Length: 216
Ligand code: GRF
Image 1: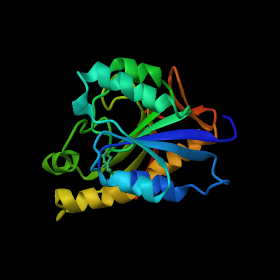
Image 2: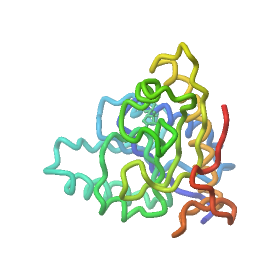
Image 3: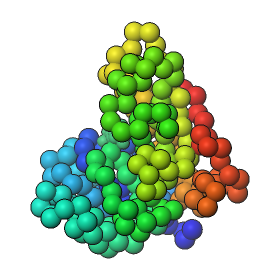
Image 4: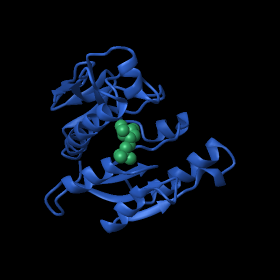
């Protein structure tokens, strides 16, 4: 990894994970620097967070493009203008085309609010409660063509309490997201984390299929 790891962050919403990443970076000290934030919604609060942090922002409204391929093509152009070593999906609510995923193979991370492979997709907190799960949490993973299915890097496990609602559980999971996502980005930026054919590798050893487990 070169001295600075250029990171481009893709968001669609509130951007609390973006904020956690911004807060975790010490300019001139951290190996990662956020070169740009790209958002598909002009009114997303995350855009304001990026602006407050003095980060370059590009808004690409997906509704202005003729289909997924056209949008993802434009997205690739916008991202690559910042010469990223790593692209971080932080609540980017778009299904990505295989071409996009292949273009960033090995340098595309996502965070998902469940203990993958459980509860892929949406409404994960409610589904964890409905399933009677005793544990829930979040997962950072490399993105591959399988939706929410790429090799896991780290999972934070949150115990489910008997009086939890989807909202209370979401709050506790979010706190963990804000810990583990910056951690994974730092690992990558330090050259400690890679995607290899067999899975995710940290410090030269293949991670277990769960990724590294952190217990809240
Ligand atoms: C997070 O829950 C993340 O796991 C999911 O989208 C949400 C984004 O939240 N991928 P925020 O915009 O970072 O606050």
